[in-house]
Image (cartoon, rainbow, N blue to C red; front, side, top):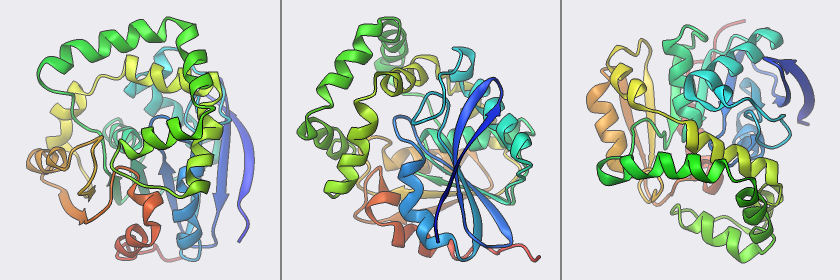
Length: 277
């Protein structure tokens, strides 16, 4: 079934949104930092027979326009996605989020911006970096974000496929040539690189980590056991904080588990009940 690509105006942004599927229920898919809706395409091809699927490019990513600094914060991005859902008249029954996309999904539920029956996290990034890194990484990211030449330099470096492949493999995942090329097409765009760096510069997960204990719906935590970007131990810590959490290990897969093996992720999602018409 063919994907429908459309552009929608909401929260002062021009969003690129991919939709497909014929199912009775609606599933919202949120990609992670530095990706776009393209990263959800392999999974969407497997789920479209059971769900109506909606996958936007997050602010500044892919073909969605550049956000304000406030829209790069976790609450700001959650509010922007919430405004998009209102414009689309979309009330997702399930939200699937990868990495930072999972944090956005949880923040949306906590803020009353969405009321799904379940949130599914694929290697979700919910907790702040610990130790010395916490004191260094965010200020460093803010400093780099302020230097526009950094994004242009990164984009030039990404013109080399070997650089992109090394970045991907550094997360514990292995993608085929087409998968690497799709990320390369994003990374050579300075605006996309700027948005990814901007998220890291403005992200503060301390409040989210504190509020996990009051998360009101089931939280499925899919864990790529070879993930080197968000270590599997983090998911176990999240489960200890969130009474609604369920751990679902994905052996042999890394941070981009849904792209490495969309079949493995789809098999777990098949347990989700589709709402009746």
